[in-house]
Image (cartoon, rainbow, N blue to C red; front, side, top):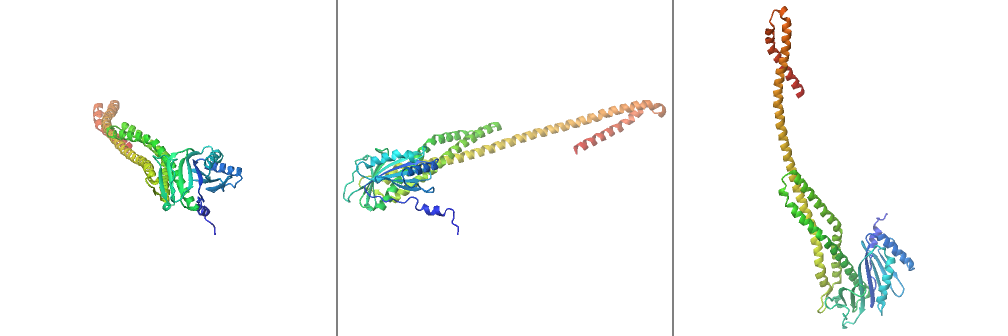
Length: 418
């Protein structure tokens, strides 16, 4: 039996991003790069780098690849829809984190295409502590530090969400007994929280950039719709309709350029919420939890994105209604103009008909006059052999000539009328 063309890909998807075993103490450094337009180039660059490191390159369909390096270092390459992540880790000792970051930065230009854009940097340390040991938070800003208790008290996560020494957001996981496989899951979820948070906020920043354009369209729309009642003639209405259509086109261009990013921002925010829910953190001591911190800082930004999307949709509907209303008004004005033109044409036709009747009467008289004149000339020449005077013949011919001419004119008019 023939396999469905997507069966293997569907089977592989469930294992696309497995959890890695992580034993404390461990140093982790993650880089996330936007690469939607250069996916193939990034894959080729990474494959070449793997060959240079004497390791097996990923399969073409692969979205997750682990590279084991010297000095107990490891790099995990992951390909997503529009970004790529490089997650570096090694045992945490002495200055191993500093050297790991330097090694990552030295190699990133070979692993990625030149057009890849940095989105997120995360520095994470996994430390082992005893159940009663006090956690050290001296490296964090005391005003913004937040701590979450996870796994029924088996670990603590701390961060201040500020950029630290390596230009990266800093996290520390204090492990009190979580097993390596569970710690791998916690680390992945935490790294994804920060990566998706940055992607969502980038969308928020881009949304802020289009807000002045939306405001301009809204103000222009209010001004234009207020002029609809003032358009007294067709030309003015058509000019206004053209301006309204141009404004609607501008709004549609803004909508088309921002729709994907706003939708992606919403999706990334949902992923952040999903990962936080999986972590299941609660507040520790007097500290704010990571979940509460992000809810207070991230949620308003996401509501702004939703608000912008709603404003675009409402403005588009209002412009559509205004355009439809004005187009109807133009149609009514054109119809009234056409009716006036038809009335004018009808009056002219009646005038022409009356004039035609007048001309017709005059033409009968004129033709009859000339024909009677001709008969008069004939009568003068025939008086000698007929014995009837020419005036008598002329007088008797008048009714007959007039009747004949009238009949012929009627026949001609009837013929052309048909």
